[in-house]
Image 1 (cartoon, one colour):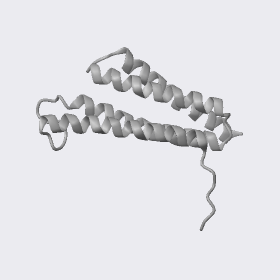
Image 2: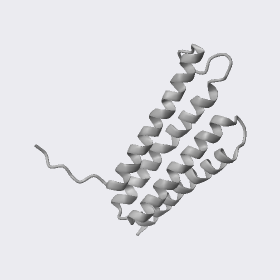
Image 3: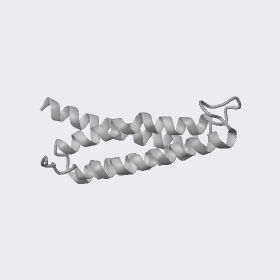
Image 4: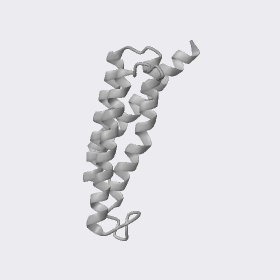
Length: 134
């Protein structure tokens, strides 16, 4: 039996939380599709566009964040900063999902969610860039 390396604890926690959120957002899309008898896409009335975009936007951003968090953890970033990034990212994705779910246009939730998402991705990217340049 191969020897298992210890899991990166902080990344594992946030990957699990984000995985659960991804499935919950997907279930919301399924609920809307079943209720409107739409098998694929957003249907003719466009009412599915919002839940589909909420799920897709999450799916577009979460994998990069998890990868950056993992690399930062492996590079030795202190756990308090990893948890800060993870907490801000999860809160930002929830704010974005709620904001976009409730409003098709601009909303404080969408704005703050996008800002927090991009800030955490940029902060981790900057840290890793600094680490790679020595």
